[in-house]
Length: 140
Ligand code: HEM
Image (cartoon, rainbow, N blue to C red):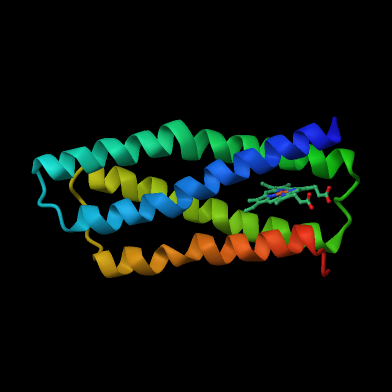
């Protein structure tokens, strides 16, 4: 059972990360689309669907399956898991921030530049590298 849940965990992680890497790219292009234009309205639909249909459910499955693995595998006292949880909490915070950005774009209230979104785009990548090293190499 543990191995099956781990497979589910990795599948959910891939879906979550795919969305977390793609969504800020949409924000970058959305910045250049004029408010009210057909292009801007299309970006709004793409952003909302990506968030609601993929990113949100994938995050929930990642958390539930990860906590199950930690519980059943008796990992809660392992230092690598503490480090991993700290990074995953930051990643979840970035997720919350992206969710607010989707709402702002939907209401044509975005005030940030495409440079900002290009920069913030790197954050999930950096966090993901740290998380994967912590869980696979277990250096702590
Ligand atoms: C949401 C909170 C999370 C918790 C509580 C959690 C916990 C765990 C646990 C306990 C394992 C099993 C480790 C083992 O059997 O050696 C695991 C496996 C794994 N986790 Fe997570 N995880 C979480 C989120 C994430 C995220 C966000 C990522 C990647 C960005 C990730 C990537 C992985 C990978 C790749 C494995 C497989 C490691 C292996 O088989 O060697 N996890 N996770």
